[in-house]
Image 1: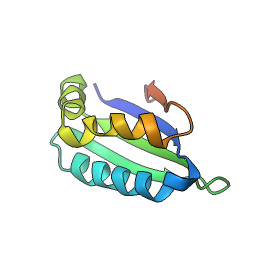
Image 2: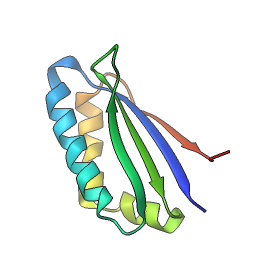
Image 3: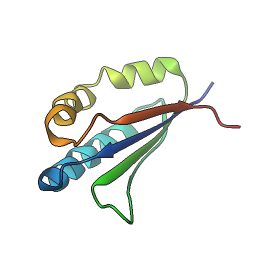
Image 4: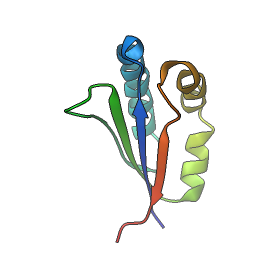
Length: 95
């Protein structure tokens, strides 16, 4: 069963470009993973510091493998220091 994830991140203004660069790398690397169906990065029109990742994975095993990738794990440090608040992660079903 496919897995749909939406992650909303609010970067600190002084770190916005660094956060975008890191996320673009994660997007590029994630798209190469066999279990990845879709991985996109969006920026809010009314607040440039608000970024959204939208992901679709083939299954839980594929998502679990993604979560173990070095480039993904490195986001933890980024989240702790470069964001205004903890990211909001939504795990959803397509209806």
